[in-house]
Image (cartoon, rainbow over the protein chains, first blue to last red):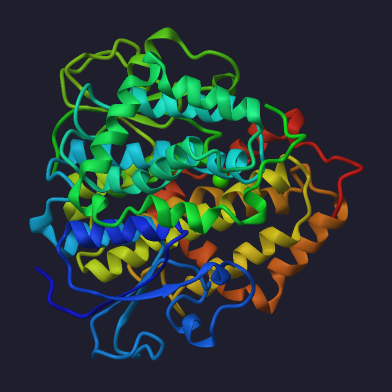
Length: 244
Length: 244
Ligand SMILES: [Ca+2]
C-alpha cells in the first residue's frame, strides 16, 4: 500500500476525471483534491497547472514529494496524467485493492473492454448529447459492449478498472436520458429511452445497476448535482431541427 | 517465458496489427501467422474468423489450446484482440523481454505516451493521407508528441510498448510523404515535408531513425512492399481540389 502523497486534479463535469476518483476511492487512497469548475474547459488554464500537465488537461495526479498546496506543485513529485494510464497506475500501487485480475488473459480482457468502449462508444456520447446527432449508432455501440459482458457480474466478473473506465459515461448517459437533458431530438430521445428499457438491453441495464451499487461509485455519484451542472450549458440544449 | 501456442491474425496494411508483430518479435515469441489481404477491410470476414473476434477486426491472437490450422480455431484457446491490450499481454507473458519498465511511474509515462498518440495523432493520419484534409493539425500533433520525448532514446528512455504502439503509423507517415503517396494536396505535402525536415523537428526525426534501427522493426519493415500495397488504393490518391 502506497503512503506517498497524492494530489488529484479534477472537475465534476469530466467523466475522464471521475474515473480516477472512483479508482482512488476503490483503493482506499488518501489524497488531496484540487477541483476545477466548468470554466476550466474554456481558454487557458492557470499558469501553475502547466507544470503538472503541459497539455493543460485533467485529470492529473502528483505523486510523492513533499506535502504542498495544490497550486504550488513541488518539482520533486511525479506528474502523471491521462485517465487510462492513471487507472493502471492506481491498480499497480494499490495491489491489495485487486483492481485488475492477476491472470494475463483476464487482464487482457479487462483492457480490451476498455478499448471497445474507447473505440465504439466514447465519441458517440458527444455526438448525441452535445451535437444532436442520430441515436442509432450509440444504441449499436451499447449492443457491442453488452455482448462483451459476461452473463452476470462486471466486465471480467470481478470488479476492475474496466468497469471504472466506462462507469462515468454510462451513468451520465442514463441520467441525461431520464432527465431529458442533451442536444438530441425529441424522437431521438424517445428512441433511446424505449430501446434501453426493452428486453434487448436487459443485461446492459443490470450492469448499470451493478455499477451504481458499487460503494466507491455510490459515494461519489450525485444526480441532482450533475443535473444542476448540465441543465444550463448551452451546447446541451435540445436542437429543434436535429435529426433523429 | 511462455511456451503456449500463439496464432497471430494480421494484415500487412494495418499499423495496428503491425504493433503486435513488432512486440512478438521483440519478445522472441514463436508464433503461427495467418495473413489477410487488403480485401479483409471490405465486407464480411470469413465465417470462422468471428469465433476469434466477434467484431471481425485484426489484430487478434489465439493463445494456448492445441496446435490447429489458423482457420479452424480450437474452443480451448483464449481469443484475444485489440492491439493495445495485446501489447500489454505480450509484455506480461514475456517479462524477460522488458517491454515495460518495472517502476510504476515509468510504466505510467509509457502508457501516457501511447494515449497522447491515440488522442492527438491517430485520427489525423486518416484525415491527411486518406481524406486529404489540411496538414497543420498533424504537424501540431507531432510537436505534442515530440515534446513528450526525453532528450535522447525512446519514449521512456528504454525501448517499450510505447515505441511499438507509435512506430507503425509514424514510419508509414514518413514513407508516404517521401514517396508522395496519399490524398493530401501538393501544397500540403510540401508543407509537411519542409516542416519535418526543419530544425524544429530534429528530435522527432532522430526518434524515427532510432525506431528504424530497432532489430524487431528493421526485420519486418519493407518499404518497397508498403509502397506497392498503397500506390493503387483509390482513397490514397491525391485529391486535386483538397485544401492544404
Ligand atoms: Ca477518436
